[in-house]
Image 1 (cartoon, rainbow, N blue to C red):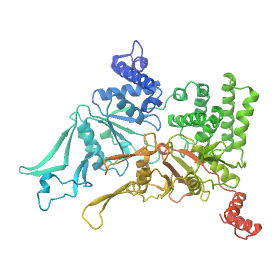
Image 2: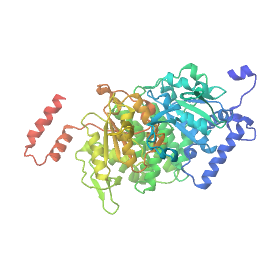
Image 3: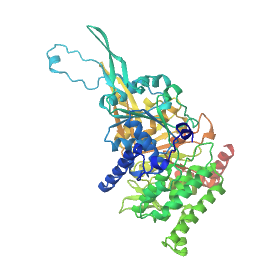
Image 4: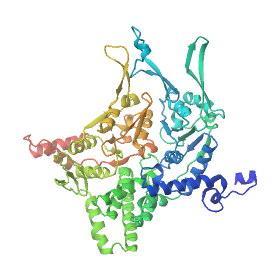
Length: 607
């Protein structure tokens, strides 16, 4: 209404963001290109394209039109919006549609100007050319200049995505000012050269195809901050709202065979968002949450382990109810679960898939039995399929020695096995009180499935270099060599990784991990000028933490960070569980049962 009153022109969102005969010329070409790219990839069966999971809702078409026009006229764009709305995915999709290379840099508080511009790096592979071979003692430099991602994008005419730009220090971002001006030039004072005519400073001008897009979450979330007004004013800012409804996203990704589940799924996601506490960010319902639930249902159905309707209920419990843990009133959780069963029953009966009696027998009763508190289901081994698990969740087997004892350890193991059913390498966040067995459970599953486990203990003093690696002096000779950190080494070798005490880590470590935890599944190391990919199906990243209320410097994690995980809440062990576990672990000790009970009772009184 403000624009209409100032420009005295009527604005129609339908003409701007919908494709039809009256679509504005400003938008028509962009929307047509988007629709053509979707049709071509669908015909070619290209499921790997970034835009294949996107449902072209009004909000997403609006974002594509605004960002597309920014790129058309060479304007730097700043996308601001909550987590999971598709900011990064849209940038990747538009780059794919335009056949453009996309370079990405994830910012955090330790991001340096050298990550953007470049710097002198140690020479790793020095080759002596013919002219130097003639010298008796060829001069081998120890350092060489390596361009940063900004300089590379400007030279190549590529797209540059600066993710979480507001987290970088203002003094670093000030170096971008000249690139954001119409001249799009950059003075590389760091690369000045001394010659006969004095010092020469390189002035780099971007190629016409170069485009810069930055993203950020609004300030107010844990660890987030606002961008300085001076820098923000140089961007064309685009607000990216949450979609008005998740139904189009869910329906597109479920497909025709599971279309009857779309409406109840979208409704239940909305209800879970209303019930989620707003103070700790434990559950953030977004399009990312919906896609995880859809992926679980589709994967379980394709594996023929579960009917789609039973997978629907388990997926709801995994994505929306388990993250609440003990933060929500049990009556609220029970109400949401009861509502999920009612919604599912209604849609299945309307579609004629089940009768009331068969739905109760095939869907409700098996689900209630598996979710019943205190139920202990045996671990099952399938020798033919080389798999093991707790019905109905199985993973590949290497050693069948795992057998969780006690009601709560059994239920905790079942929850973790359920989270591991998701395709790819979706990270898992385990939260529970000290001693509940978070790390031990992951270690046992890693051993049973034949994976090597790398455990990394985090603290507020842990740095990004401690995880990824750094250049260190060579032993016994001049020069430097790159030494990969434990996380980077584990990703290269396809190991499982446990990041212990996640909520003790600094904000820079959390933001440095963002890109390897979401759909991109990669880590960019500026020192090596190289991206390392998480090996889908081999590498698994687990994070363990005690609840923030335990104190000791623990904090609530940012919503944008937690939303990248499948959350598994582990319930505390009861005295009966402790007695069963101690008796099984130390079965060879000649301790009378009443002595063991007294020890456990004393331990409970002390704690």
